[in-house]
Length: 355
Image (tube, rainbow, N blue to C red):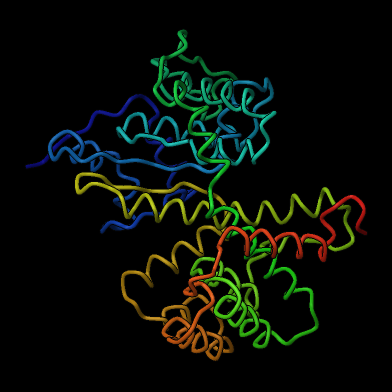
């Protein structure tokens, strides 16, 4: 049966903006053309009862909020509002929680500001003034009309409770430690192949093996690293260095969050992620393809042939058996993690009294 979808005026331009930005990464079977076809989402939502959820990152959330707060629009704000318009029409639900968590960044003082931003986001996302979103996104006006009423939302009601859980997240601190160790190795004078095997040996013998930081490291230590992926600068002050390490950690954490949601999703759900971050996109594509094929050689599609030895080392380590510290009865994950964090923060100069 042929179905006709009536688009709002100028909505074709919205589709073009979102498709050209190529925001979406997904794990379900589709073609590049269909992923930006609103009709497919509408049919599957209304007839097949599929729920589509889109996780956005902090940069996109920031652009969405700035579109309302800032009287001088830029192309990033307009593109972000195009994404909101596309999702509204396509019946795609947007999840902004992880972006809000990143904004708080373990700072209790930021929670009220973050809640205010979350409330504003819901008023933008749920605005009935869809023509205003379209006009803003395509440059015909410089403001957006949002929902006149503050919405009652379970996410707001329970946000403080969620934040308490967030502050105790073990995975974030594990990834933070992984990035600290990768940074320590990266600024050493080892050869790239030695850097990678040193990291894997440390994970295997001293702590725990984690896939996503390992993929981050193999890209970093290759001759085809992604521009800007390594943010740490040893000459900066301790506050900037701390922020640089934290930013790299959030990249890794967001990917992990996506996979955790994928593993928990219902059969009638499909999960996507929206980001402009090329590092997040690259690692997600690699890990998604590897999880589906179990083939380590797929990394060669994204890395130079000179990385083949590192890829083989990665495969061997992932299959390695024998004693691991984390399997010991006396292994205390939190204690070990926190001790290594303190040690490496001192070494990398993340305290005020350390140059």
